[in-house]
Image (cartoon, rainbow, N blue to C red; front, side, top):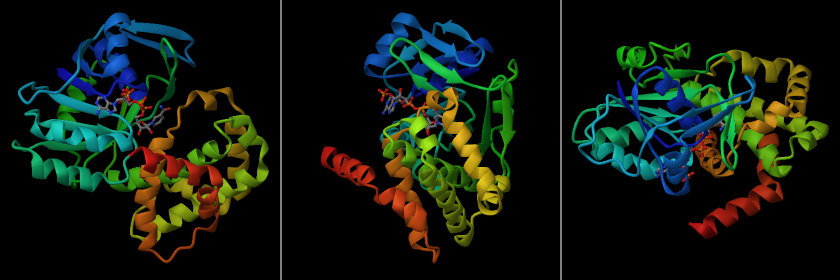
Length: 317
Ligand SMILES: NC(=O)c1ccc[n+]([C@@H]2O[C@H](COP(=O)([O-])OP(=O)(O)OC[C@H]3O[C@@H](n4cnc5c(N)ncnc54)[C@H](OP(=O)(O)O)[C@@H]3O)[C@@H](O)[C@H]2O)c1
């Protein structure tokens, strides 16, 4: 299948590697230094748990033309990057689009594409269950087994199952179809927000987070508050087990996050502070419409570092 990976960061690079090895005709869209690097060296991945390095040559383009048609386009970038690329996707004639990554406003993105596209599109949302980090001359990927993705569409039945099946047919990569992807993505955002806020407060020093019991308790309580906001606003929390853990087994959740932040693996998973602000703003809109109080999340947000960071971002834009 002719596949475009739009965004060649951590997630896009691993996905491209999987799809190249599955004999798809893969192109990546990258810009600036990353495009140069990919043209020169290919996709260089260090598979952290498997302790191996792979290199894949790939076709690189710098822009998506209207008449450049693919069987599917996977857009793999940060939530905060999406607004810039939706116009190019809308004007392109490809029909099948999979928007991959944290996404707090899937309905709005879909509405934009539906309204602005000349040709009808099948729009699907995905979340790749791998982590990683960009290093100077390679990308680290943290994956269990062959990697996988949760996929769903806002329509009642998941669109694109046949195309997705065809694209991944020669892989061990696990596709999980999710009927309520919007709630899944919003639930996932609740886990991400307190963890990224804690990382910001401690300057990405994961051991310092692990040692700070008060911060860890706040992190667990903030997740519980976030899930309450979602439930009160009519969203299903998926998977429910995560919400149950932080509500009913706070001490176990505390120990889990303490241990997680001590693991060397945790520091290989790249958080994003730019994305954090976008996600928090989207969460805040939902929270404003509910009666749920979020004192622990508010404390994490009111920390001086987050306030300074938001100020800096506003000055830059
Ligand atoms: N990395 C992880 O550990 C991890 C784990 C779980 C989930 N996720 C989620 O997966 C999603 C993607 O994350 P990621 O880590 O893959 O992000 P990333 O490494 O920052 O990759 C995004 C890529 O998209 C490119 N891009 C952004 N805007 C573009 C544009 N307008 N035109 C062309 N290219 C553009 C960026 O290019 P530049 O480099 O030029 O900006 C970058 O190469 C996020 O929602 C993230 O939260 C990531």
